[in-house]
Image 1 (cartoon, one colour):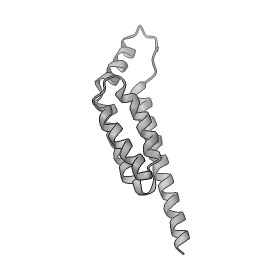
Image 2: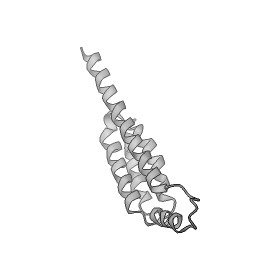
Image 3: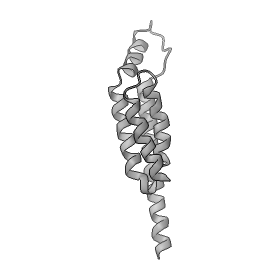
Image 4: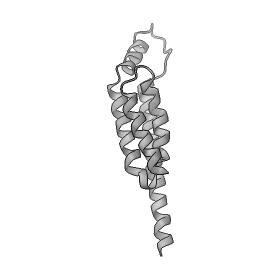
Length: 112
């Protein structure tokens, strides 16, 4: 089941590259799916998070929103959207690694 979540995360991450404005927001959904890809689907989840980092970094719509925030009359009307999305990916990566390490320890204990 975890491989399925990881595979779905990769597919959505790749598709979100080609969807303007909504695509970068799909990275949040992909991060949640990547967290569920622990264990056998760890490599798929990790790959999806890496694709998300590239999507956020290369997305012109995200950086256009950030530029609009900077051009406002000194008022901060919008949050730092790209940095928030990067933070979501970092947190999901940490959670994915932590869950995977914990599951591996449980498997080693059960084998003894």
